[in-house]
Image (tube, rainbow, N blue to C red):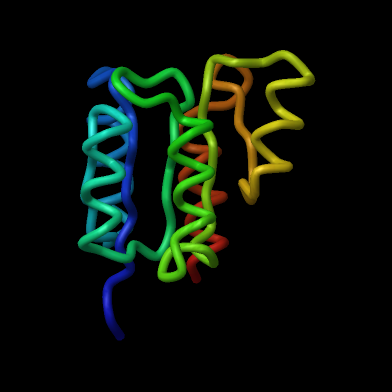
Amino acid sequence: MKRKTILIIEDDEGIRVPFEHLLREQNFKIISAGDGASAIDLLQRTKPDLILLDLLLPVIDGFTVLEKIKNYEHTRDVPVVIVSNLSEEGEVKRGLSLGAAKYFVKSQFSLYQVVDYITSVLS
């Protein structure tokens, strides 16, 4: 069976690196981007099986990245899991209305809970 690929779009290495490590332990292939522009560039060349997306990103914000993901023909159906510090109800609703499959507020969930969710979605 082909290894599933996850694109992690996160500018904070203190969050991105542990996610990469935990997801590799679950036998996922990981690609990552530290800002919105790099993520969009990667998405034009690859189709991950799932995207883990922060919203507070340099260069291009995560909401704009999410809109582009859902507008590209080849990534439209890729599940997007938002993991963000933005916790206002309006921000959560906006992320979900733009097409995110799940929205995790960083302070309310552990990395392990997010990884468990991703594993269940991709298995």
